[in-house]
Amino acid sequence: MKNNDFDEEPPSYDHAFQSNMEPDVKVFQYGKYMDASYDSFQKGEMFIQAFSSQLDGFPMLQAQEVGQRGLLNCLQIDTNSQKNELLKHPQANPAFILQQENTVQFWPQFHPTATGLIDYDTTAQASHPFLTLTEYNPNTQYRPDQTQHYFEITVRQAGPEVVMAIGLSTRPYPIFRMPGWNKFSVGYHSDDGHKFCDDATGGQPFGPSWTVGDTVGCGYCPETGNVFFTKNGTLLGYAFSGLIRHHYFASLGVDGPAVLTVNFGKYPFQYQVENWAGQFI
Image (cartoon, rainbow, N blue to C red; front, side, top):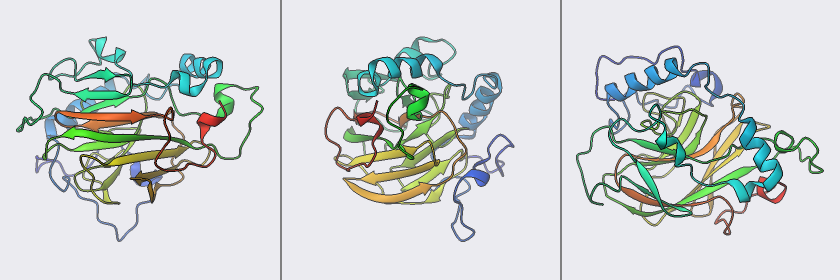
């Protein structure tokens, strides 16, 4: 963060109680590279207050649609939320568009190598949530003890200063905050490899950085609250375990012009996932 008066998170952030924070793991108070402004943080808190009664509500309609049509037939990047005046990005609209069904272009208004953009952090969410199989279909014949949700993104284009993130977030989520920065979200960020869980400060060291050409994945088990990440087909480990249950949506974020390809399972994953939800529903 860029404001030295910002000393601690407000009570709405409870990551210390639900993430695997270790006493000897440093939490960077303002972010290793001071990515976000204090103004962005304040707007995020205002968003939480404004939508407090709607945060993390059970997405009944989307769950029913998955139960009827199947997970892979439903999952895509949601662009419709940007049509809502209350949910669109405060800097410009649209913040992202779909070049193809699975390719997201962030900030198409700018040249791909544009620099110096302040508070253009953006999160795009999937159209449907990561739930247990019985929440999609109470009558399902498949009842594994643990169901793994998983998706991957591949970085096709991004400037050297652009920070990217992959993770999970609930709805509604402030489009102007990266995954992991705001309430009910987790993220793994490209610039410093830090992991974030409801973390308005600077996250914790977790894995390697990543950039153009890399494929990064995020896995989530709703039964256990475990979240793991992968890079180029290699498991990096569990970033968080035993998270409080939320109704998460797959999420990806950037803070500048970038093009990312998203794979929800229509194409082979680089990482082989056991008990992947897509094969059951």
